[in-house]
Image (cartoon, rainbow, N blue to C red; front, side, top):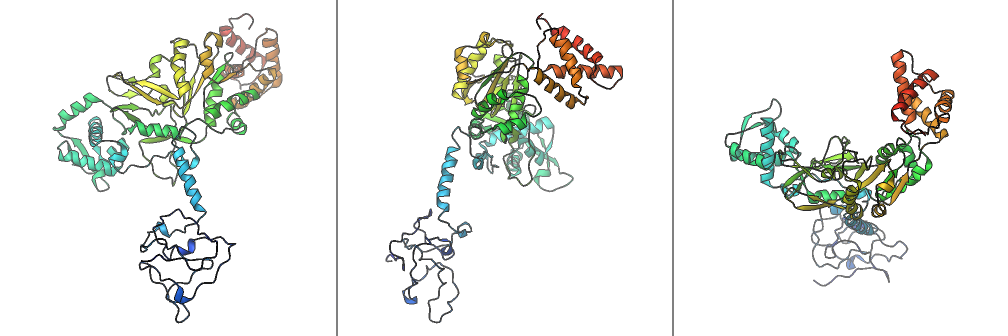
Length: 552
């Protein structure tokens, strides 16, 4: 068939380049959606005898109003004819191709593809490309094998005694259809038997399953491998991709957002100026200063500045070994919102975690914890803190020496990767996407060296409050505790027990002293209040134990 030329195109007119297949003919339903340059002059349509006939596959259209004209739909104003570069016939393009094709949308589709590719890089993903685990439809999409799911089902029924089909699917966090197919296979192998049906509902999900005697030997072998009884794991590759898309690096936290999150404590402006850039970088920060001045309280409120939520897997699979990550104590789960799209229930939607470790920290806790009894792993503290904050409080008071601890952190802080060791001796590299915060009240010169300070880019000294700030903290604590605030009594406290003795202020002292005042008032059967008798008793009880320096 000879190539057909476009009739009536004005001189110099070039048709817009659509992001579609050039070999596909445009159907009459797509014609009105083509946009041309409005400023170009349009030539009148040619005579009816010169018009081209529509493609054979085009649907019939109503006849024109003028007698003798060709039986085809009138062209819309400004339309210069379809692109006849293809010699094939038009075919029905489906429901999606009925959507109008706008020329202006072509660059948007190209930009979207670029953003989606960049979202896989270790950078802050755009909001439109946030990680959302799609609900799997097959075992291949789950990244699991039939034998692994069979083992999880047999262990779940073994530890429970008997289970309904729906309860098994809920325990494994897998779609009911997938679990029903695996259960049916176990029944054909004589490993499961049906004890009865439920009181309500129909189908396999309401049937009650129990183990048969044929499953005894198989179950013994399964329990020898591991005794993990919980949701099905996700692959380590999926988890790594999720960590990169949910990275804590490169945030955009403003001073206004921080003031709102820190509104319940009294801190100075230099604190905001110090921790704000550090949180935006997502890198490590080192707090130092005298004890009792809010270093831990500041870190606890920093995690609230990172808005949004993340998905944390119940467990991951590394070389056929199960590593449990989700911790219902450290991770704060979020309830599902009405109308939200479904997602893979092997993931838990949570707030960004904050993991705090103190003097109990040992070197073993920084690696995978393997239990010979249950034969699966518990994730390390830094893995549970992934995409969140890890606070090493009271740094320098751990059982392990500060030098050994710092040497363990040097490589992760610089390369954003950590090496974990399996009990078999194999090392596995995992992402270290953690905002690490070190806090100490010891002399930093006795703890850290230049190599460590170079990798911890932000350092912040948390200073003692002055007298004006001490008044503000005392007033704020009184309002929180429901005790009438009396500035004259605070002046009495400062004049008698601070100026006269040379005692220095600490941010925790108003809270601690007021709590003792409340306890003594309740003991005496009087309303809690600030008076000289209660304040003197509180000071005498509070400072005797801790005042070891004569100058304090």
